Image (cartoon, rainbow, N blue to C red; front, side, top):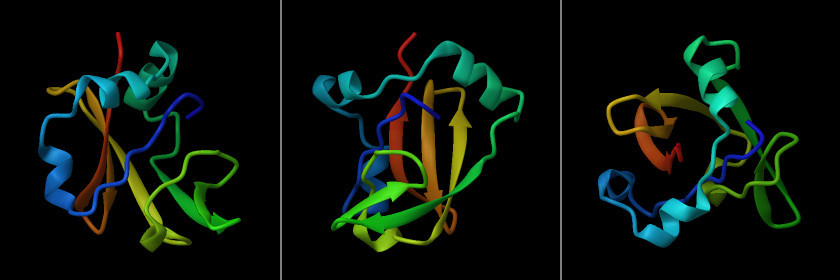
Length: 100
């Protein structure tokens, strides 16, 4: 998931609020990546790892919440709101807008 940036939310429900334009601008996802997600060619679970005091998804340089180090998170596509959801134990912990 090359061009995804994840946002950390203190509270899962905060992810459901509308993001500011600046936050929207931070997230970019290439259209072909979206298509691969839709066709489930990309793995929908990935592991977050802790390194240098920051949290990364394996082989990806996007920090996520510290509490997610080493935990399995699920990435799901929310077609209605045109966004990508990051779930942990079925709670939305991050949201990412897809720019068309």
